[in-house]
Image 1: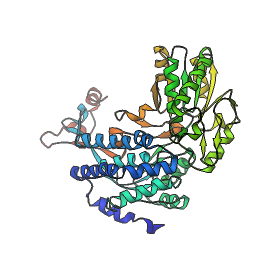
Image 2: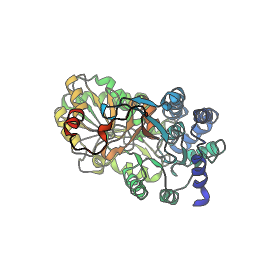
Image 3: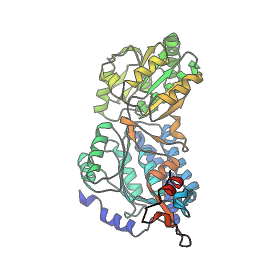
Length: 455
């Protein structure tokens, strides 16, 4: 595998400080932005081949998001790079203190197949913004997008700065045996554990963007029509193959039936009554995942959908009620266009249900009750989420995106992405004109002064 990449060359290039200057970072970001324009049609075509995404959905959910992040980095980079002054306590008087960000070095970015463009170029953007060199390993499942990414980046960036490695399990294994300064992984919890285990051998820091069963809760105070419309969009975007898609819905029982009727209406308006024949409705990535999802269709009472086509690997947006709670449908992340809906008495019962499960990556609350909103913010553990919407917290670059507990560790987006790919170095600067004798031995007789001056 070593003939596929040259890490020593990248390490040497980084060690010489070539990527540190602002001008170099800005130029790399400008180049990356320009490439998303030049390759836009080819990237959209690759996403269609891999996932059946329409050109419009590809632009909305991947290409435009990457462009927005690159623009944000270019706009704020100079300010992010400036040393930040911080106060100094009396115990170090007289002194000046500051933090200085420094690139981590050689970074490995391992991206998944479900958003193969966004989740490759987004972390790469922050790696370059922070002054690193990076190896990108796209998923083998999204073959067409991976190939275009390799062509786009290898033909336009020096291999001293960016290298792209294609391949499957063997390539992943070989890369994880190497020593890195940071590993950024997006994918399943199972593979995340392997990444973390391998990284520990070199004490390499890791960012794990995983997933989990992200719930939504709807109470009787919510605007049911808007809730149904937004949940239908968020759940069936990319045919449900989104790490922060609503995995299941908990809803107060008195609005259960009205919500189901509205959900059906909006699903059919968005995807037509025959979605598996809709050319703009995405497909499942491969036969393995298709078969897994089809097996889940039997694990609840069918309310809507359930149709599928093995030839096109399309599964209609499906709503299940009364799901089997101990089945894979309710135990594992669905990652497809199947939405279980469960009745609950109130928010307390919903919270008890959620808290029994591993910490989710996202949570979506549809309510006008400020008490419930406050309780959700204070009590429930989850990576991030929305009130009266879903998915869109990813679109705000001013808030961090990341998991907690079994849904991941570390975060990025905006300045948080810059800081994730940087080391924040602490500096304390002293002059020579004042040198307080109290700190030096001998200490006998100084206790009263210590207690008066020190905490």
